[in-house]
Length: 304
Image: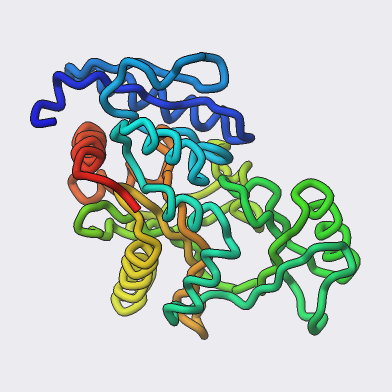
């Protein structure tokens, strides 16, 4: 498709996950921008519309969380030969699954905090070293993210996660600066690094989406060597899982251990407070250019 302006674009947003509200906000932002740029676009919510795949040339995927970024919608779009933004099935499955991501990180020699899979509240095997992080293996936007300082808290949070999700990921807590590196395809361009300083102890869902709950510092206050390593690790993980389009890699920069990679988000938010648009703007990429770049990536060919 040589003329994107003639394409009918479905802005996929809403969906079925706990991140529905964030998805709707991302979708509205992109939809309004597309209309201003003269594109033929329509917001499409799979949770409330039937035959939502019909009549479009490109899907701008902003369905966060379950179904939207775990390979589900990617499989449906691929099966219907519909071009779409973001990563393909393989990268989406790995990126949404924190355990699979950990395994790729270890295999590629990319530093990441020690971890263990928990399948019951008393499943922990290891030293009583605190604090520790507990989180779902498959969830986004830092939903149900906990920090435990005692064995009792570790057991309580483990049981809560196992009850809700069937398992949990326990991770060593790393003291340091929390940063995120956004990557843009097809050249795996690393954008300026953003530092996140939540007012509370954790950069959880509330800290992400409540105005004033987190201080954002761009560029991050880390050394040039640390920045180079962060961008190197982000590009390596992006390429290792076969990601496409835009993605974001979260890390902790430890004074003792250097950058430690936590996870990759293969479908970054596009809200007014999202990290990716801010990092792109710092690199001289406007919101409109960011959107058009993702559309161009979408029509490059089949994804993994």
